[in-house]
Length: 289
Image (cartoon, rainbow, N blue to C red; front, side):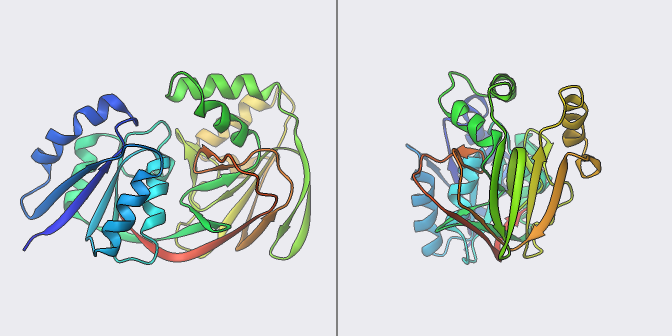
């Protein structure tokens, strides 16, 4: 009996792409596999479907959507033998980019059909999981605005980020890193990364390992306005480690105790959490890439 690939499709993510996905699955997934498709109906539905399938021993579950969809499904596969496949159709697709999974649907389906996979860590935020990153800076505020914005896509994100940059008050706070207090001043971003990218090729932690048992703390201090474009350029060209305004530190445990906004894998969290503890769960995901 052939093994089954379950495609969990978020119809609201990349709607035009997802309208074409079913005939492409039929065409490009070979007959060595059985195929089942599942459409999500609301936020959190993908997690419920994936959790049920994983407990039933599903061989592979494919997230068809953006980083939010990946988060839901990856969170359900922790410590299961089920493979995680990804067809990236979202706005940012940071997790998929880290694993060099192409946005071209046919190319991504060929990876799924091959079935090769690697082990990956996953981050933990209190009792939840994050696949890519968590942040409490400008990124979290932009994620909140983007959630309620009238359109999706890269340029919508840029428009929101630009407008919020000039309104944002830099963060002055203290966090706990591996048991030691760290004072932070004048920060735009305070992010904790399991992989390398926010999304849209914005690399906050270039060459960050997804399977080293560590997270990477990234602090972006607000630069002078004239320096800002050059600093942003470094993020998009994987040269941000050379910037005087960005620091990187490997760690396994971080605690945030004061924040106005927080995002997880690009999604704003509507939460009243007063304290956030971040840790890493080692090599508990099998990612097809």
